[in-house]
Length: 318
Image 1 (cartoon, rainbow, N blue to C red):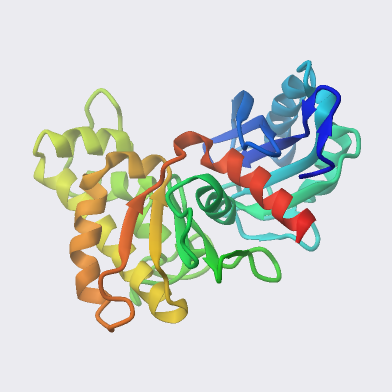
Image 2 (image 1 turned 135 degrees about the vertical axis):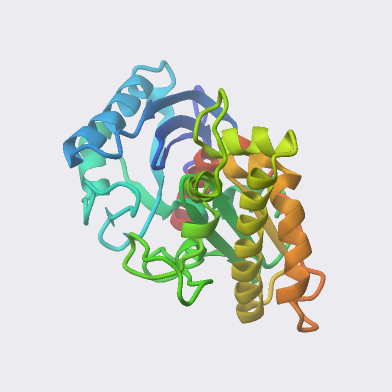
């Protein structure tokens, strides 16, 4: 893989995971997928393009100081979308300062010109879970990130399917509510607007829920839901229903063996997955989608980084 072993050991990939809340980076083994030297910084998503890039520069700078940096051969970047992998640009819905931002070009200046591969965060998660996680061994899978936003990636016919521009599987911005609220992407009734962590907290607050010590976040709603708060439970139930509708539509279109759910909101476990599975039976009714498997992601917080590396390796070796 990636030129095999150097005198010091296996080659490494600089993996970067860009989300609306934080930017993470790590050195990832090209052969074993092991995450080394993980670094996180706040995204500063409400700031200017330069401020967001400053967070990325801090992450890369700290990793370049690692004693293992000389074994890095490739850069893999997973980013919230939409994005254009052909041009190396990103326009994340939840990072307003980045619109057609030339991410790969700017990043090359931080890495000394190492070759880079840009991947959507959902596609990166799919690559990770298919390589080392819950989608391992399945030929057709949808892997979803449910966090500040909602993203997804597809494995079809046993291979990662990013699509021509890298946006295939971007399930967070399909409409599941024809008369729903406008979305920041320009659409209406998007899945992200109903099932993201932000949406869950917003719905609970609108119903009269009062935040506890964890604040007005999906984590706070989950704490209240576990304590039996009906408004918090209803917010998760609505998110699960929206996810069920989006998953059923996707499975009907492309035929899936398994759907893997990860991301920060998925840490709520059965508060989210229970309603999702129950409502999926109402939407996935055709014979070839009935009984579709829903599994929690296995790689946790490392999925985006492992996936960015895996997708980059896949792109350079196909």
